[in-house]
Amino acid sequence: MCQVDENYHDDLDPAEMLNVSKKCIKCKEASAAVVIRVGDTYCRGCFKEYFIHKFRAMLGKNRIIFPGEKVLLAVSGGPSSCSMLSQVQEGLSQTAHRKLRFLPGIVHIDEGGAVGHSMEERQKALAELQTVFKATGFPFYFVPLEKVLDLPSSVVATATAPSEHPASAYKSAVNDFIHIDSSSCSTPLDQEETSIPEVQESHTQFLQQLIVSVKTLTARQDLLNTLRQHLLVDTARTKGYSKLMLGDNCTRLAVKLLTSVSLGRGAQLAQDTGFSDSRYGDIISVRPMRDFSTKEIAYYNHIFSVPSVFIPGLDTKTTNKASIQHLTESFVTKLQTDFPSTVSTIYRTSEKLQTACRSSSTADCCDRCLLCMCSLDTAPENASAFQATLISEQLSQNTFLGASRSTKIIPRQNQDPLESEIAAPTGQCCSSGGEEGCGSAENYEVCYSSAHRPQTADVKSFLCYSCQLTIKDMSSLEHLPQYVLSEAWRRHSRSQMREEISEFLLDDGDEGD
Image (cartoon, rainbow, N blue to C red; front, side, top):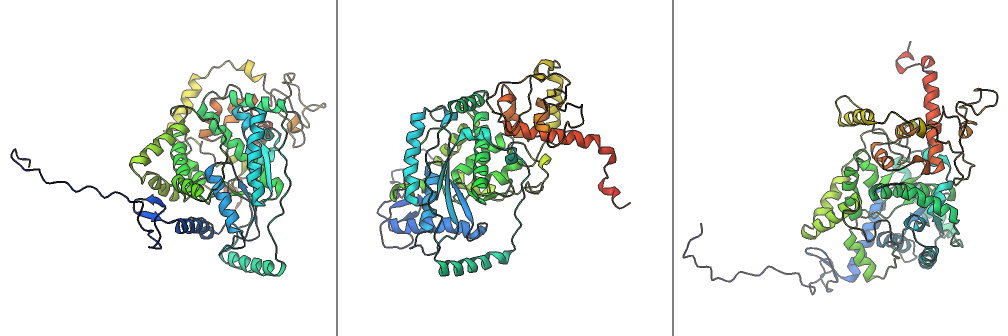
Protein backbone atom coordinates (compact mmCIF):
# COMPACT_ATOMS: atom_id res chain seq x y z
CA MET A 1 0.00 0.00 0.00
CA CYS A 2 1.01 3.64 -0.49
CA GLN A 3 2.56 5.30 2.53
CA VAL A 4 2.77 9.01 3.28
CA ASP A 5 6.49 9.00 3.92
CA GLU A 6 7.34 6.57 1.10
CA ASN A 7 10.47 7.49 -0.82
CA TYR A 8 9.98 7.69 -4.62
CA HIS A 9 13.24 9.42 -5.54
CA ASP A 10 14.63 6.46 -7.50
CA ASP A 11 14.80 7.16 -11.23
CA LEU A 12 12.57 5.04 -13.42
CA ASP A 13 14.23 3.13 -16.21
CA PRO A 14 13.09 4.49 -19.58
CA ALA A 15 11.28 2.09 -21.86
CA GLU A 16 13.43 0.61 -24.57
CA MET A 17 12.83 2.54 -27.78
CA LEU A 18 13.25 1.06 -31.20
CA ASN A 19 16.50 2.07 -32.78
CA VAL A 20 16.72 2.34 -36.54
CA SER A 21 20.36 1.32 -36.33
CA LYS A 22 19.40 -2.17 -35.16
CA LYS A 23 20.65 -5.11 -37.14
CA CYS A 24 18.40 -7.16 -39.39
CA ILE A 25 16.83 -10.06 -37.51
CA LYS A 26 17.44 -12.39 -40.45
CA CYS A 27 20.96 -11.79 -41.75
CA LYS A 28 22.24 -10.29 -38.45
CA GLU A 29 24.67 -8.15 -40.43
CA ALA A 30 23.09 -5.26 -42.34
CA SER A 31 21.36 -2.36 -40.63
CA ALA A 32 17.59 -2.49 -40.49
CA ALA A 33 15.69 -0.49 -43.11
CA VAL A 34 12.09 -1.20 -42.06
CA VAL A 35 10.29 -2.13 -38.86
CA ILE A 36 7.23 -4.21 -39.68
CA ARG A 37 6.24 -5.07 -36.13
CA VAL A 38 7.81 -4.48 -32.75
CA GLY A 39 11.10 -6.29 -32.92
CA ASP A 40 10.71 -7.37 -36.57
CA THR A 41 13.40 -5.35 -38.30
CA TYR A 42 14.62 -6.15 -41.81
CA CYS A 43 17.30 -4.80 -44.04
CA ARG A 44 16.51 -3.89 -47.63
CA GLY A 45 17.53 -7.22 -49.17
CA CYS A 46 15.95 -9.44 -46.51
CA PHE A 47 12.72 -7.47 -46.62
CA LYS A 48 12.42 -8.03 -50.37
CA GLU A 49 13.17 -11.71 -49.89
CA TYR A 50 10.57 -11.93 -47.13
CA PHE A 51 7.92 -10.16 -49.24
CA ILE A 52 8.46 -12.33 -52.32
CA HIS A 53 8.49 -15.55 -50.33
CA LYS A 54 5.26 -14.60 -48.58
CA PHE A 55 3.50 -14.00 -51.91
CA ARG A 56 4.63 -17.22 -53.56
CA ALA A 57 4.01 -19.27 -50.42
CA MET A 58 0.37 -18.18 -50.50
CA LEU A 59 0.00 -19.40 -54.09
CA GLY A 60 1.98 -22.59 -53.51
CA LYS A 61 0.14 -23.51 -50.34
CA ASN A 62 -3.32 -23.41 -51.92
CA ARG A 63 -2.44 -24.89 -55.33
CA ILE A 64 -5.50 -23.53 -57.10
CA ILE A 65 -3.69 -22.00 -60.08
CA PHE A 66 -2.34 -24.78 -62.31
CA PRO A 67 0.69 -24.39 -64.61
CA GLY A 68 -0.14 -22.90 -67.99
CA GLU A 69 -3.45 -21.46 -66.78
CA LYS A 70 -4.50 -17.98 -67.89
CA VAL A 71 -4.95 -15.65 -64.91
CA LEU A 72 -6.48 -12.18 -65.15
CA LEU A 73 -5.06 -9.63 -62.70
CA ALA A 74 -7.59 -7.02 -61.55
CA VAL A 75 -5.53 -3.85 -61.09
CA SER A 76 -7.30 -0.74 -59.83
CA GLY A 77 -4.16 1.38 -59.72
CA GLY A 78 -3.92 1.37 -55.91
CA PRO A 79 -0.85 0.32 -53.91
CA SER A 80 -2.07 -3.21 -53.15
CA SER A 81 -3.04 -4.24 -56.69
CA CYS A 82 0.07 -2.60 -58.19
CA SER A 83 2.23 -4.46 -55.66
CA MET A 84 0.50 -7.69 -56.72
CA LEU A 85 1.30 -6.87 -60.34
CA SER A 86 4.93 -6.26 -59.39
CA GLN A 87 5.12 -9.63 -57.63
CA VAL A 88 3.74 -11.46 -60.67
CA GLN A 89 6.20 -9.64 -62.90
CA GLU A 90 9.04 -10.56 -60.53
CA GLY A 91 7.92 -14.20 -60.42
CA LEU A 92 7.91 -14.52 -64.23
CA SER A 93 11.34 -12.95 -64.75
CA GLN A 94 14.22 -15.06 -65.98
CA THR A 95 16.20 -14.48 -62.78
CA ALA A 96 13.45 -15.74 -60.47
CA HIS A 97 14.48 -18.62 -58.23
CA ARG A 98 11.12 -20.39 -58.38
CA LYS A 99 9.27 -19.01 -61.37
CA LEU A 100 5.52 -18.66 -61.54
CA ARG A 101 3.98 -20.91 -64.17
CA PHE A 102 0.71 -19.22 -65.17
CA LEU A 103 0.00 -16.83 -68.04
CA PRO A 104 -1.09 -13.41 -66.72
CA GLY A 105 -3.22 -10.64 -68.18
CA ILE A 106 -4.30 -7.30 -66.72
CA VAL A 107 -7.71 -5.67 -66.56
CA HIS A 108 -8.64 -2.24 -65.21
CA ILE A 109 -12.24 -1.14 -64.61
CA ASP A 110 -12.64 2.58 -65.27
CA GLU A 111 -15.19 3.83 -62.72
CA GLY A 112 -14.84 7.51 -63.56
CA GLY A 113 -18.35 7.68 -65.01
CA ALA A 114 -19.94 6.53 -61.76
CA VAL A 115 -17.81 8.87 -59.63
CA GLY A 116 -18.50 11.90 -61.83
CA HIS A 117 -15.07 12.49 -63.36
CA SER A 118 -14.76 14.42 -66.58
CA MET A 119 -13.56 12.68 -69.72
CA GLU A 120 -10.24 14.53 -69.53
CA GLU A 121 -9.60 13.27 -65.99
CA ARG A 122 -10.47 9.73 -66.99
CA GLN A 123 -8.20 9.81 -70.04
CA LYS A 124 -5.32 11.17 -67.96
CA ALA A 125 -5.61 8.41 -65.33
CA LEU A 126 -5.86 5.71 -68.00
CA ALA A 127 -2.80 7.09 -69.80
CA GLU A 128 -0.76 6.79 -66.59
CA LEU A 129 -1.96 3.22 -66.07
CA GLN A 130 -1.21 2.39 -69.69
CA THR A 131 2.41 3.37 -69.14
CA VAL A 132 2.61 1.08 -66.09
CA PHE A 133 0.95 -1.84 -67.88
CA LYS A 134 3.10 -1.59 -71.01
CA ALA A 135 6.24 -1.88 -68.89
CA THR A 136 5.15 -5.33 -67.68
CA GLY A 137 4.81 -6.85 -71.15
CA PHE A 138 1.50 -8.51 -70.22
CA PRO A 139 -1.69 -8.14 -72.29
CA PHE A 140 -3.99 -5.58 -70.68
CA TYR A 141 -7.56 -4.40 -71.12
CA PHE A 142 -9.32 -1.17 -70.16
CA VAL A 143 -13.02 -1.72 -69.50
CA PRO A 144 -15.27 1.27 -68.70
CA LEU A 145 -17.92 0.66 -66.07
CA GLU A 146 -20.53 1.78 -68.60
CA LYS A 147 -20.07 -1.58 -70.33
CA VAL A 148 -22.00 -3.16 -67.46
CA LEU A 149 -25.17 -1.89 -69.17
CA ASP A 150 -24.54 -4.23 -72.12
CA LEU A 151 -23.66 -7.40 -70.21
CA PRO A 152 -25.55 -10.61 -71.03
CA SER A 153 -27.83 -12.16 -68.45
CA SER A 154 -25.50 -15.17 -68.31
CA VAL A 155 -23.31 -13.19 -65.87
CA VAL A 156 -25.87 -13.81 -63.12
CA ALA A 157 -26.98 -17.22 -64.40
CA THR A 158 -25.70 -20.71 -63.68
CA ALA A 159 -22.22 -21.45 -65.02
CA THR A 160 -20.64 -24.87 -65.35
CA ALA A 161 -17.98 -25.29 -62.69
CA PRO A 162 -14.67 -26.89 -63.71
CA SER A 163 -14.08 -30.44 -62.59
CA GLU A 164 -12.08 -30.74 -59.39
CA HIS A 165 -8.54 -32.00 -59.80
CA PRO A 166 -7.16 -34.67 -57.47
CA ALA A 167 -4.30 -33.80 -55.16
CA SER A 168 -1.75 -35.62 -57.32
CA ALA A 169 -2.82 -33.75 -60.46
CA TYR A 170 -0.94 -30.60 -59.49
CA LYS A 171 2.48 -32.27 -59.32
CA SER A 172 1.94 -34.05 -62.63
CA ALA A 173 0.80 -30.77 -64.22
CA VAL A 174 3.98 -29.06 -62.96
CA ASN A 175 6.18 -31.80 -64.43
CA ASP A 176 4.38 -31.65 -67.78
CA PHE A 177 4.67 -27.86 -67.89
CA ILE A 178 8.39 -27.93 -67.09
CA HIS A 179 8.97 -30.52 -69.82
CA ILE A 180 7.01 -28.53 -72.40
CA ASP A 181 8.58 -25.24 -71.32
CA SER A 182 12.14 -26.57 -71.56
CA SER A 183 11.55 -28.08 -74.99
CA SER A 184 9.62 -25.21 -76.58
CA CYS A 185 11.04 -22.29 -74.55
CA SER A 186 7.57 -20.80 -74.37
CA THR A 187 7.10 -17.25 -73.15
CA PRO A 188 4.17 -15.43 -71.59
CA LEU A 189 1.34 -14.11 -73.70
CA ASP A 190 2.28 -11.49 -76.27
CA GLN A 191 1.21 -8.01 -75.32
CA GLU A 192 -1.80 -6.70 -77.16
CA GLU A 193 -2.01 -3.09 -78.21
CA THR A 194 -4.98 -1.91 -76.21
CA SER A 195 -6.22 1.60 -76.79
CA ILE A 196 -8.16 3.65 -74.28
CA PRO A 197 -11.85 2.92 -74.98
CA GLU A 198 -14.29 5.62 -75.99
CA VAL A 199 -17.48 5.90 -73.97
CA GLN A 200 -20.77 7.28 -75.20
CA GLU A 201 -22.14 10.19 -73.25
CA SER A 202 -25.61 8.63 -73.13
CA HIS A 203 -24.25 5.50 -71.41
CA THR A 204 -22.42 7.62 -68.86
CA GLN A 205 -25.62 9.53 -68.08
CA PHE A 206 -27.56 6.30 -67.61
CA LEU A 207 -24.86 4.95 -65.27
CA GLN A 208 -24.94 8.16 -63.25
CA GLN A 209 -28.73 7.89 -63.01
CA LEU A 210 -28.27 4.39 -61.59
CA ILE A 211 -25.80 5.64 -58.97
CA VAL A 212 -27.88 8.70 -58.08
CA SER A 213 -31.01 6.57 -57.69
CA VAL A 214 -29.37 4.93 -54.65
CA LYS A 215 -30.02 7.16 -51.65
CA THR A 216 -27.18 6.29 -49.25
CA LEU A 217 -23.43 6.11 -49.85
CA THR A 218 -23.34 2.71 -48.12
CA ALA A 219 -25.70 1.20 -50.69
CA ARG A 220 -23.90 2.97 -53.55
CA GLN A 221 -20.56 1.45 -52.64
CA ASP A 222 -22.11 -1.99 -52.22
CA LEU A 223 -23.86 -1.77 -55.60
CA LEU A 224 -20.71 -0.46 -57.27
CA ASN A 225 -18.67 -3.38 -55.92
CA THR A 226 -21.26 -5.80 -57.27
CA LEU A 227 -21.31 -4.25 -60.74
CA ARG A 228 -17.50 -4.18 -60.82
CA GLN A 229 -17.36 -7.88 -59.95
CA HIS A 230 -19.85 -8.72 -62.71
CA LEU A 231 -17.74 -6.83 -65.22
CA LEU A 232 -14.54 -8.56 -64.09
CA VAL A 233 -16.12 -12.00 -64.42
CA ASP A 234 -17.53 -11.21 -67.88
CA THR A 235 -14.14 -9.90 -69.05
CA ALA A 236 -12.40 -13.04 -67.81
CA ARG A 237 -14.91 -15.23 -69.63
CA THR A 238 -14.79 -13.37 -72.93
CA LYS A 239 -10.98 -13.17 -72.94
CA GLY A 240 -10.52 -16.85 -72.07
CA TYR A 241 -9.19 -16.58 -68.49
CA SER A 242 -10.12 -19.17 -65.88
CA LYS A 243 -8.81 -17.40 -62.75
CA LEU A 244 -9.29 -13.85 -61.49
CA MET A 245 -6.61 -12.45 -59.17
CA LEU A 246 -7.68 -9.68 -56.77
CA GLY A 247 -5.47 -7.35 -54.75
CA ASP A 248 -7.31 -7.44 -51.40
CA ASN A 249 -4.79 -7.17 -48.57
CA CYS A 250 -5.04 -8.16 -44.90
CA THR A 251 -6.15 -4.73 -43.68
CA ARG A 252 -8.78 -4.43 -46.39
CA LEU A 253 -10.16 -7.89 -45.62
CA ALA A 254 -10.35 -7.10 -41.90
CA VAL A 255 -12.40 -3.99 -42.71
CA LYS A 256 -14.48 -5.99 -45.17
CA LEU A 257 -15.27 -8.65 -42.57
CA LEU A 258 -16.66 -6.17 -40.04
CA THR A 259 -18.45 -4.26 -42.79
CA SER A 260 -20.09 -7.42 -44.12
CA VAL A 261 -21.35 -8.30 -40.65
CA SER A 262 -22.81 -4.81 -40.32
CA LEU A 263 -24.50 -5.08 -43.72
CA GLY A 264 -26.03 -8.49 -43.01
CA ARG A 265 -23.64 -10.53 -45.15
CA GLY A 266 -22.62 -12.93 -42.41
CA ALA A 267 -23.56 -15.98 -44.46
CA GLN A 268 -21.15 -14.94 -47.25
CA LEU A 269 -18.11 -14.06 -45.11
CA ALA A 270 -16.17 -17.18 -46.08
CA GLN A 271 -16.42 -16.33 -49.77
CA ASP A 272 -15.97 -12.57 -49.38
CA THR A 273 -12.77 -12.83 -47.31
CA GLY A 274 -11.28 -16.25 -48.13
CA PHE A 275 -8.37 -16.99 -50.43
CA SER A 276 -10.58 -18.42 -53.18
CA ASP A 277 -14.12 -17.60 -54.24
CA SER A 278 -15.94 -20.02 -56.57
CA ARG A 279 -19.43 -18.50 -56.52
CA TYR A 280 -19.39 -17.98 -60.32
CA GLY A 281 -18.49 -21.59 -61.08
CA ASP A 282 -16.19 -21.37 -64.08
CA ILE A 283 -14.29 -18.26 -62.89
CA ILE A 284 -12.50 -18.60 -59.54
CA SER A 285 -11.31 -15.45 -57.75
CA VAL A 286 -8.13 -15.67 -55.65
CA ARG A 287 -6.59 -13.19 -53.18
CA PRO A 288 -2.82 -13.79 -52.96
CA MET A 289 -2.22 -10.48 -51.11
CA ARG A 290 -4.40 -11.38 -48.14
CA ASP A 291 -1.38 -12.01 -45.86
CA PHE A 292 0.09 -8.53 -46.40
CA SER A 293 -0.86 -5.54 -44.30
CA THR A 294 -1.21 -2.04 -45.72
CA LYS A 295 1.98 -1.04 -43.87
CA GLU A 296 4.06 -3.79 -45.47
CA ILE A 297 2.78 -2.93 -48.94
CA ALA A 298 3.46 0.78 -48.44
CA TYR A 299 7.04 0.06 -47.31
CA TYR A 300 7.70 -2.29 -50.23
CA ASN A 301 6.31 0.10 -52.86
CA HIS A 302 8.31 2.99 -51.44
CA ILE A 303 11.64 1.18 -51.09
CA PHE A 304 11.53 -0.58 -54.48
CA SER A 305 9.74 2.20 -56.41
CA VAL A 306 6.61 0.28 -57.38
CA PRO A 307 4.44 2.74 -59.33
CA SER A 308 0.77 3.27 -58.49
CA VAL A 309 -1.92 5.66 -59.71
CA PHE A 310 -4.34 7.32 -57.32
CA ILE A 311 -7.90 7.48 -58.68
CA PRO A 312 -10.56 9.10 -56.44
CA GLY A 313 -13.56 6.96 -55.54
CA LEU A 314 -17.04 7.45 -54.17
CA ASP A 315 -15.82 7.87 -50.58
CA THR A 316 -12.88 10.15 -51.33
CA LYS A 317 -12.87 13.28 -49.12
CA THR A 318 -15.97 12.14 -47.25
CA THR A 319 -16.45 12.15 -43.50
CA ASN A 320 -15.91 9.04 -41.40
CA LYS A 321 -19.64 8.65 -40.84
CA ALA A 322 -20.59 9.03 -44.51
CA SER A 323 -20.98 5.26 -44.98
CA ILE A 324 -20.70 2.05 -43.01
CA GLN A 325 -17.68 1.02 -45.08
CA HIS A 326 -15.81 4.25 -44.38
CA LEU A 327 -16.76 4.25 -40.70
CA THR A 328 -15.54 0.68 -40.24
CA GLU A 329 -12.27 1.46 -42.02
CA SER A 330 -11.68 4.48 -39.78
CA PHE A 331 -12.47 2.41 -36.69
CA VAL A 332 -10.09 -0.42 -37.60
CA THR A 333 -7.19 1.82 -38.65
CA LYS A 334 -7.42 3.99 -35.53
CA LEU A 335 -7.63 0.91 -33.31
CA GLN A 336 -4.66 -0.60 -35.15
CA THR A 337 -2.58 2.46 -34.22
CA ASP A 338 -2.96 1.84 -30.47
CA PHE A 339 -3.29 -1.95 -30.62
CA PRO A 340 -1.03 -3.31 -33.41
CA SER A 341 -2.59 -6.80 -33.31
CA THR A 342 -6.10 -5.60 -34.18
CA VAL A 343 -5.98 -6.33 -37.91
CA SER A 344 -4.23 -9.67 -37.50
CA THR A 345 -6.80 -10.80 -34.90
CA ILE A 346 -9.72 -9.99 -37.19
CA TYR A 347 -7.92 -11.52 -40.15
CA ARG A 348 -7.16 -14.79 -38.35
CA THR A 349 -10.84 -15.01 -37.45
CA SER A 350 -11.79 -14.79 -41.12
CA GLU A 351 -9.41 -17.66 -41.93
CA LYS A 352 -11.46 -20.01 -39.74
CA LEU A 353 -14.78 -19.24 -41.42
CA GLN A 354 -16.39 -21.82 -43.67
CA THR A 355 -19.57 -21.82 -45.70
CA ALA A 356 -22.24 -23.80 -43.85
CA CYS A 357 -24.61 -24.06 -46.82
CA ARG A 358 -23.90 -25.91 -50.02
CA SER A 359 -21.46 -24.44 -52.48
CA SER A 360 -22.74 -21.68 -54.71
CA SER A 361 -21.13 -23.26 -57.73
CA THR A 362 -23.27 -26.38 -57.39
CA ALA A 363 -26.47 -24.74 -56.24
CA ASP A 364 -29.37 -24.07 -58.58
CA CYS A 365 -29.45 -20.56 -60.05
CA CYS A 366 -32.73 -19.80 -58.27
CA ASP A 367 -31.07 -20.62 -54.94
CA ARG A 368 -28.47 -17.89 -55.46
CA CYS A 369 -28.68 -14.14 -55.08
CA LEU A 370 -29.43 -12.24 -58.26
CA LEU A 371 -26.68 -9.68 -57.57
CA CYS A 372 -23.87 -11.12 -55.43
CA MET A 373 -24.39 -14.74 -56.65
CA CYS A 374 -24.10 -16.17 -53.13
CA SER A 375 -26.49 -18.72 -51.68
CA LEU A 376 -29.74 -17.18 -50.49
CA ASP A 377 -30.00 -16.75 -46.74
CA THR A 378 -33.59 -15.48 -46.67
CA ALA A 379 -35.48 -18.66 -45.79
CA PRO A 380 -37.49 -17.45 -42.77
CA GLU A 381 -37.60 -19.74 -39.78
CA ASN A 382 -40.18 -19.69 -37.03
CA ALA A 383 -39.58 -17.07 -34.33
CA SER A 384 -36.57 -15.66 -36.19
CA ALA A 385 -35.63 -11.99 -36.36
CA PHE A 386 -35.82 -12.07 -40.15
CA GLN A 387 -39.38 -13.39 -40.06
CA ALA A 388 -40.37 -10.61 -37.67
CA THR A 389 -38.86 -8.08 -40.07
CA LEU A 390 -40.84 -9.52 -42.97
CA ILE A 391 -44.08 -9.37 -41.03
CA SER A 392 -43.42 -5.76 -40.05
CA GLU A 393 -42.75 -4.81 -43.67
CA GLN A 394 -45.92 -6.52 -44.85
CA LEU A 395 -48.06 -4.79 -42.25
CA SER A 396 -46.57 -1.36 -42.93
CA GLN A 397 -46.56 -1.69 -46.72
CA ASN A 398 -48.83 0.55 -48.68
CA THR A 399 -51.58 -1.51 -50.29
CA PHE A 400 -52.04 0.84 -53.24
CA LEU A 401 -49.50 -0.46 -55.74
CA GLY A 402 -51.51 -0.35 -58.93
CA ALA A 403 -49.84 2.75 -60.33
CA SER A 404 -46.32 1.57 -59.67
CA ARG A 405 -46.96 -1.92 -61.01
CA SER A 406 -48.26 -0.61 -64.30
CA THR A 407 -44.97 1.17 -65.05
CA LYS A 408 -42.65 -1.85 -64.86
CA ILE A 409 -41.03 -3.12 -68.05
CA ILE A 410 -39.28 -6.33 -68.96
CA PRO A 411 -35.90 -5.79 -70.60
CA ARG A 412 -34.70 -7.35 -73.80
CA GLN A 413 -31.11 -8.28 -74.36
CA ASN A 414 -31.08 -6.57 -77.77
CA GLN A 415 -32.81 -3.45 -76.49
CA ASP A 416 -30.93 -0.21 -75.96
CA PRO A 417 -30.71 0.22 -72.16
CA LEU A 418 -31.25 3.95 -72.60
CA GLU A 419 -34.55 3.52 -74.45
CA SER A 420 -37.53 5.29 -72.96
CA GLU A 421 -40.11 3.28 -71.07
CA ILE A 422 -42.63 1.41 -73.15
CA ALA A 423 -46.09 1.17 -71.70
CA ALA A 424 -47.78 -2.10 -72.57
CA PRO A 425 -51.51 -2.70 -72.76
CA THR A 426 -52.76 -4.36 -69.60
CA GLY A 427 -53.58 -8.01 -69.99
CA GLN A 428 -52.28 -8.33 -73.54
CA CYS A 429 -49.88 -11.20 -74.12
CA CYS A 430 -46.74 -11.17 -76.21
CA SER A 431 -48.07 -13.91 -78.46
CA SER A 432 -50.43 -12.74 -81.18
CA GLY A 433 -52.28 -16.00 -81.03
CA GLY A 434 -53.05 -15.74 -77.35
CA GLU A 435 -51.03 -17.17 -74.49
CA GLU A 436 -49.57 -20.11 -76.41
CA GLY A 437 -46.01 -18.79 -76.62
CA CYS A 438 -46.05 -16.62 -73.53
CA GLY A 439 -43.45 -17.61 -70.99
CA SER A 440 -41.49 -19.83 -73.34
CA ALA A 441 -37.72 -19.64 -73.38
CA GLU A 442 -37.61 -17.77 -76.69
CA ASN A 443 -40.41 -15.31 -75.88
CA TYR A 444 -39.99 -14.39 -72.22
CA GLU A 445 -37.63 -11.50 -72.92
CA VAL A 446 -40.10 -9.63 -75.15
CA CYS A 447 -43.25 -10.14 -73.11
CA TYR A 448 -44.63 -6.80 -71.92
CA SER A 449 -47.78 -8.12 -70.30
CA SER A 450 -48.35 -6.35 -66.99
CA ALA A 451 -49.79 -9.54 -65.56
CA HIS A 452 -46.46 -11.28 -66.09
CA ARG A 453 -44.03 -8.52 -65.10
CA PRO A 454 -41.99 -9.11 -61.93
CA GLN A 455 -42.82 -6.53 -59.30
CA THR A 456 -40.53 -5.14 -56.62
CA ALA A 457 -41.43 -7.97 -54.25
CA ASP A 458 -40.61 -10.50 -56.98
CA VAL A 459 -37.12 -9.03 -57.52
CA LYS A 460 -36.45 -8.97 -53.77
CA SER A 461 -37.34 -12.66 -53.49
CA PHE A 462 -34.28 -13.47 -55.63
CA LEU A 463 -31.89 -11.43 -53.47
CA CYS A 464 -30.01 -12.22 -50.28
CA TYR A 465 -30.70 -10.18 -47.15
CA SER A 466 -27.86 -7.71 -47.70
CA CYS A 467 -28.71 -7.09 -51.37
CA GLN A 468 -32.33 -6.55 -50.35
CA LEU A 469 -31.15 -3.71 -48.11
CA THR A 470 -29.23 -2.23 -51.04
CA ILE A 471 -32.22 -2.43 -53.38
CA LYS A 472 -34.41 -0.98 -50.65
CA ASP A 473 -32.37 2.25 -50.78
CA MET A 474 -33.02 2.67 -54.52
CA SER A 475 -35.68 5.12 -55.64
CA SER A 476 -36.65 2.91 -58.60
CA LEU A 477 -35.66 -0.55 -59.79
CA GLU A 478 -35.99 0.58 -63.41
CA HIS A 479 -32.48 2.03 -63.21
CA LEU A 480 -30.96 -1.43 -62.67
CA PRO A 481 -28.98 -2.83 -65.61
CA GLN A 482 -31.01 -4.70 -68.18
CA TYR A 483 -29.30 -8.05 -67.64
CA VAL A 484 -30.34 -8.06 -63.96
CA LEU A 485 -33.99 -7.38 -64.77
CA SER A 486 -33.92 -9.90 -67.59
CA GLU A 487 -32.63 -12.64 -65.28
CA ALA A 488 -35.18 -11.65 -62.65
CA TRP A 489 -37.93 -12.10 -65.21
CA ARG A 490 -36.53 -15.48 -66.29
CA ARG A 491 -36.46 -16.74 -62.71
CA HIS A 492 -39.92 -15.34 -62.08
CA SER A 493 -41.30 -17.14 -65.15
CA ARG A 494 -39.55 -20.35 -64.15
CA SER A 495 -40.97 -20.25 -60.62
CA GLN A 496 -44.48 -19.58 -61.97
CA MET A 497 -44.17 -22.47 -64.38
CA ARG A 498 -42.98 -24.73 -61.59
CA GLU A 499 -46.01 -23.81 -59.50
CA GLU A 500 -48.33 -24.63 -62.39
CA ILE A 501 -46.88 -28.11 -62.88
CA SER A 502 -46.18 -28.79 -59.18
CA GLU A 503 -49.00 -31.36 -59.06
CA PHE A 504 -47.24 -33.48 -61.67
CA LEU A 505 -43.76 -33.37 -60.11
CA LEU A 506 -42.45 -36.26 -58.05
CA ASP A 507 -40.92 -35.62 -54.65
CA ASP A 508 -37.69 -37.29 -53.58
CA GLY A 509 -39.65 -39.63 -51.35
CA ASP A 510 -41.85 -40.78 -54.22
CA GLU A 511 -39.00 -42.01 -56.42
CA GLY A 512 -38.73 -45.31 -54.59
CA ASP A 513 -42.45 -46.12 -54.87
